[in-house]
Length: 94
Image 1: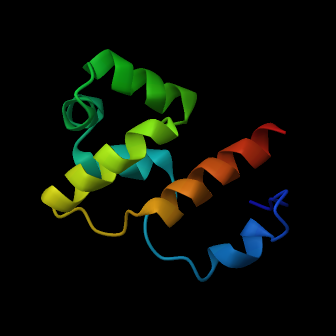
Image 2: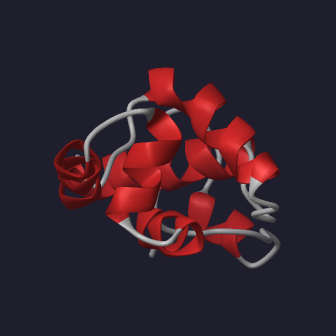
Image 3: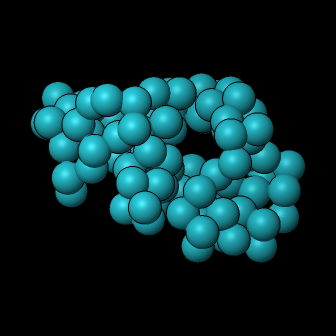
């Protein structure tokens, strides 16, 4: 994937150095699927599944998602990972 971000750096060059989760699917897999993500966010399974289909978790859910990830000892998920995943998704759309 080669993405030129509007904030001035090339995600493709950063990819080789980045550790952690790289896709939204990896986040859902780490939690155990849409039902588990829904429980973590106090949302329905269908709501979580819709986020997965859209390829985007709204940023207002990120603090709760990360807090639940820590409780579940899910490694390699932080704000940086979420930003990069969403930036890559956005760059593929534009």
